[in-house]
Amino acid sequence: MRYFLVLLLSLFSIQISQSQIYEFGIFAGGSNFVGDVGSTNYISPNTLAIGGLVKWNRSPRHAFRASIIYTNLKVEDSKSDDPRRVQRGYGFQNGLFEASIGMEFTFFDWDLLDLAPKGTPYLYTGISAANHENFYFDNGTLTSENTNSWAYGIPMVLGYKQVISPHIILAAEVGARYTFSDELDGSVPDADFRQQFSFGNINSNDWYVFSGLTLTYTFGQKPCYCDF
Image 1: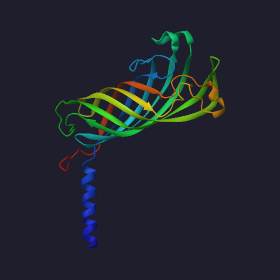
Image 2 (image 1 turned 30 degrees about the vertical axis):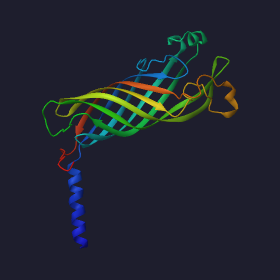
Image 3 (image 1 turned 180 degrees about the vertical axis):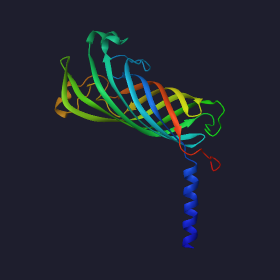
Image 4 (image 1 turned 180 degrees about the horizontal axis):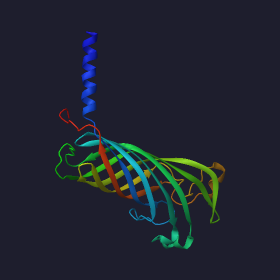
């Protein structure tokens, strides 16, 4: 009985390994910030964002995905449509390094075993963690706290991908990140004793958005999706 179970597990392992196909590649585009400083336009990239990603296509309709992206958020009240922000004149730059992991869902079957040209819209969501510098505004003067924090959030990405060769996939996507933090723009200082410098809507957390292109290379065993 024990040898029979070992054999079953071995066959299952072989079947899983043969059903795997992977992608790895790059992301390049722009970023913008939505919070208590600067413009409130959700899709308005103004700074370069670049990174890398990997995927495991688990079935024709979903894939596990992980990515890292770096950008230097550049935010200015002068770019806002709110005259009160324009008059206030705050601004900052904040380097942001994000790591994200989650699941990508395709609208149509995405069977890479089929070599015919194909494309599909897709959604991606999961969890993200963004490392950023802490600072605050002291009577309008940007003051660094000389510390960094992690802003955890939920990525909400909409995109479209297209096979452009047997091993190359090109995609365009826009991804908003809702964070569980109000510290990215200095409106809520990280240190408790500096809370007198808080400003803005304390009931609204920060967002940032990545817009751009991904280019990935597929490799690994050809998929067998007969079990899904």
